[in-house]
Image (cartoon, rainbow, N blue to C red):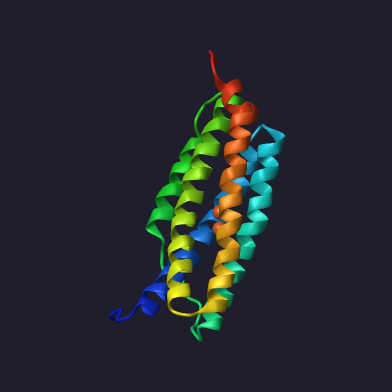
Length: 165
Ligand code: FE
Ligand code: FE
């Protein structure tokens, strides 16, 4: 079907995110297991819980628009998740691994921030207030997660990873 309106683009964006969120929910437990730093492990586990809520909110957004929830393979998430998985497989010092896991996770968060940011803008423009509210809630959590990961990296993980031989 041809996409005729911004509303059609919004629906396609939601479908992309359904796929992205489910792929992310699949890799986060692996990242939590691989992380050594306790706070980082907790951050990944907490974000897994949030990610499951994000999937629910997407379904809610479809419902609010009178559409059937669908998934369209998110190729970007596929690439980012594959990258994350290959990092997990690498032979690295625990602190170095943690620093790399943060990097991989932030790439994912930035993809989500860009996606939810755009869809929030579109929903607002289309006057879809409730859809906007639902998406903005998730956007806020993605932004907080990104900030928290930066904080953890700066606090000790990056420094601990320096000069590992
Ligand atoms: Fe998410
Ligand atoms: Fe996220």
